[in-house]
Image (tube, rainbow, N blue to C red):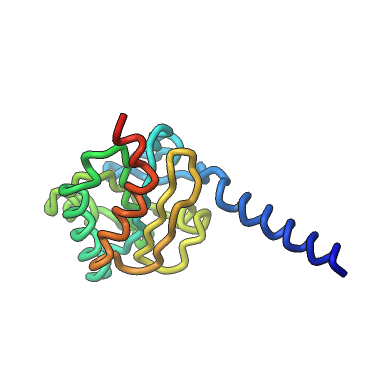
Length: 168
């Protein structure tokens, strides 16, 4: 019985560790100009990554992006962190996303997940969703809600993981 318990704990630990170090999916997304790109083509392998999944039709999601823009300007944009916003509600027509992004002067990269492939591959079931990976593509944290009011937590998670890189 003791051996069975040890085997179960060991297996669960191995599965948890493996789930956190798996590579990011290399699915296709669109740039705001309509060009198809693969996720790995736009990722900087030397940096931590923050993915923000959002809907253009949701006011709270847009407020979330504005809040993240403030954090980006104040803190994260000066670091080795790549912030990528992914619009997920754009089946068919998504021409309204680019004017919105330009009007808000967002400094981070924005892409459109037209068919929801990336959303499914990263197991995003509700938006907004913020997922943070370190430079080795290990999952640091996942926040399935609005970051408004939790920007400090996001910075803490990111800067805690990348503080050594910042000192170089």
